[in-house]
Length: 258
Length: 293
Image (cartoon, rainbow over all chains, first blue to last red; front, side, top):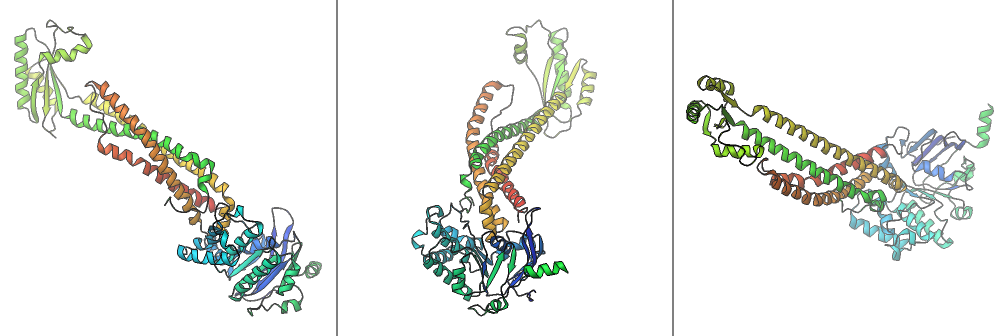
């Protein structure tokens, strides 16, 4: 079962990934994300959440299957076209991946500088966002001085500063307290209301349950999009239809048997 | 360009810290090679034009001074009427003794020694004088005369100079290649050290040119810094060599001091080296990143 439509922000069809000659770490992943949808990607540690996100933010190439982003087939997209696509994607990395020699301000400003936004505009937006995430007094501090939670907020600010069309966050609330976690989730929801498609990978079922967005569940490299009821509940606050499908392990087994 | 803010901490790379000094050494050597090349070129040009417009006529000594004087007069008569000759002047005996002194010692050349008479001939600028025809005519009128147009030794000397010049050019090329090689190595090391940061830049949408610009800007700055240091050391060396050459030449060599145009060419060396470093860094980054995802 696959979702039709080339207007999907993300579309995976029978995607598989293996490292070298090892076993497939992701198997037959098929799903599509409609513009403006909000999904949680759940799964235990090692289930492949980060790997799936890496495929989505173009840090990895699949060993099989088709990935389409913003209507572009990644198999036929040239390397020169990738930067333009990547600028439409905001990523919160699990390990933050901040540049430690740059201040919090310069880290957050990076996506705007890469996009050649004027410095006076950069200053205005970056300071505003850092204030919003509670780092007003840490603008010129380098990440090495910041706590894990503060680094995480800088990473989130960097991911959202350029108002991406697709936001991928890998455990974005892993190092902050519940109050800050909810505050950051509201930031994502605000962004979602403005039309950004959001995928948040987390193992925090409670947090995902509290917000009630549809869930994609990864289990040992297999993606389970949930029950039809859960999919039907995939209407986000923005009203966009979100659909995620995947061949279940049972379906795959029955196909193999045939 | 080099003053621009950089997203990569390239200034803190250990291999990069040695780059200006390596470039300084290269520029120092290049300055010496270039100065030598320029001086040899000027020298060859001066000899080519200066000696090419002169001839020396040698008259074998006769058995008496009176006969010698007659032969000189007859030779001068032919020379002064020969087309293309601007001036013909016999070299007096005193000057001839001076020229022989280095070989025969003071007072070694005496009046008793039969010496040929020499006539210094200056040709009109651009005149094509047939030295063989002149020699034939002189020999017919005054037997025992010989014409030396300096062609043989001048040709050998200029060939030697051109060979040394070619060697200096090869040295300059090798220095350029060595500089480029050093920059390639440093840039690749920098790319390896900052691989993760570059990956982050890529993932947030930076183009290869964005990253390459940072490496190229730094290579330009390092090249200029190293180039200026190299030149600062090269200038006193060249002045010292020039001073020693002036003291040693003692009339055997023409003036070997550097002119303003030579100094201007040397001043351009840091710019050329910095440009080589910048272009090399940019090409290296672009080619390396093209292999990344």
